[in-house]
Image (cartoon, rainbow, N blue to C red; front, side, top):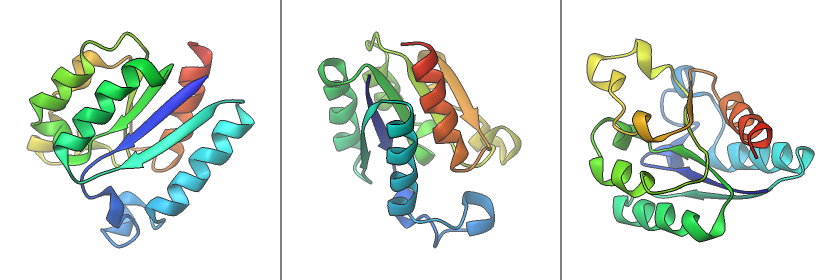
Length: 142
C-alpha cells in the first residue's frame, strides 16, 4: 500500500512551538516514526510538509495517481482553507485527517474543520501516535 502523509502550515516548527500542546519532537523525528510504523505495517510512505497552500493542493492532486491512502494534517488550514477541502473531495482513496492536539476541545475557531466531510475518519489529540493510528486505519481499509 502506498501512503502519502501531507503536513501543512507550521508543522515544520514542531518541537519549538508549544511542546506541551503539540509534543516535543521535530518534524524530522515525527517523519522518522511514521516511516518506522509504515515499514512495520508493510506500507510504502512518503512524507511531505509545506507552508505553501498551493503546493499542498498540488500534492493532494498528485495523490490521485500516486497513493492508495492519504494522511492529512493541514494545520490551521483545516479551519478555513476551502481550496484544500475541494482538492481532497474528488479523491476516491481513503483519507485520514490527523491533528496532534485535540482541536475539538480548543478555541471555537479551531473546532471547525472544513475538511471533515471529505475524509474517511479523523484522529485528534493523540499526539504523534495519531499518525500511527492513521496508518493502521488505512491498512485495515486497504
